[in-house]
Length: 299
Length: 299
Image (cartoon, rainbow over all chains, first blue to last red; front, side, top):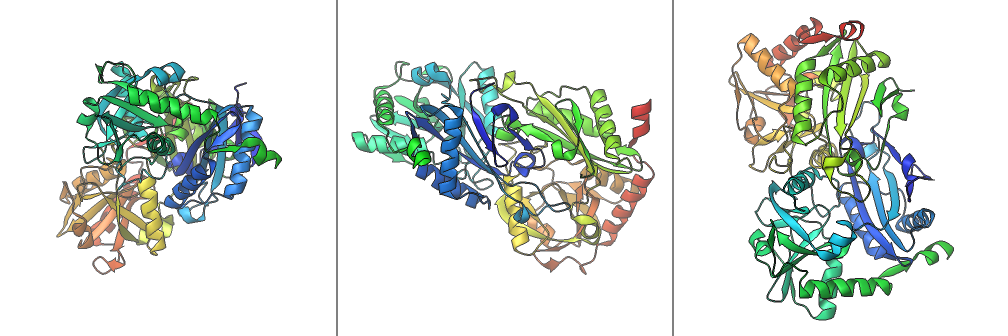
């Protein structure tokens, strides 16, 4: 039995029994939003901010979480405890549209479903590569435009991202970076992208998820007095960066050390990237922006 | 118990037991392609063409149907018979990516899953409206670009379509029409769009599914000597059409009789639309392009 726990259809079940109706349009039309946070040393990270973003994603898709934020927080905590992952958890929550009434295609009358699952902490590229840095593939597949599906609402429209990853793996690289329809960098599959040139960090401000770890990187830059910019970023800026890194709940701050097989700088994680990485984990160990699981559950 | 039958994880099960693992990236990343055909009077419609397109969708997403086309055909027929729907069936087939190996995000090493379900024949807008015509809503939500997710590969990236439908319903209209990023008509949620002006039919040739019912309409135009064009179609051509119709497996040829509450022509189904509708159903009754279910199953 795999380590983890799911809450679905009102029950806590093992991962192997975590099944959803194929008639839930969360499956049939990817009519679902999600969010991800993590737990570390007994603390859930930025719980309130994640719940706020989750609620915004729901609203953006005209979905409604059947649970209040307070109830959701308790379910996530309970699921984390049942999974036995309080010291290192990957916490995934979803609201799906649910099933259509018979003969109807009207999304307004579906009973929206909440699902969450918790598994041991995930490093996006495995622990070793997430720390040592990856070789990223610049794809010509376009990221879905926010004019079609708004990237601010965290969703599973990943067809472009998966095909980009497929290209990357076939090319022997570790993951992919996508541009939006305007030709500027958008994001990668599950991560935001940062470039550093002459001591200044920059990350795209459009057609990408406004990631929580992206926000953490902003806060860490502010704490350390590292200048940063939120703006359009051309892919050539990534190709010619002094350093680059990705941000994701599944690893925090993770070095990008090569683009299309060409090393950035000397090919090792950069100085500022390493500083941000160390600060991130130092803060996490200290319970930074953490909500204590035991307090959520035991009052 | 609802009428229908599903084949999933190698078993035939009732609709109520048709559940898929939430860890199948068909759910988690909408990494899934599908196809839909119908049965009428004991015949499955254009089975070979649908299986060919389904295989093309799989290939486009780097997925592989674990069953051959011949095996798939038998599964669809068996599922239709078990559903008791041989005289009027809606037949849905899917290949999902499956689950990632633990710690991996590599789509190349997943065991792809085949799922199909059969329910009684579905009319896209209910039988009455699908025959009498609908009032369509022109939305400003953009259809996902084929540069991101290729619309030729039938997929569940419907976030844009669902939000457009939501707008349509809120405006008291029946369904929505979307334009692609170039500002020309793309498609609606599950249907292609046709306009008729001065006796000439036209339908978009880009950023839309190359629908099987769209193809049927082309064949019916050819049979009846009705001129038609496959080309860019501006949304104003829909607004100012003499007639318009939608094509979908869920209804065949269906009149669009108003755009944004403004009637097309006299507000009734147009003459050519009615001719195509009648020809479509006459042909279907005759077993047009049909594969006899009993021959598939009983040899």
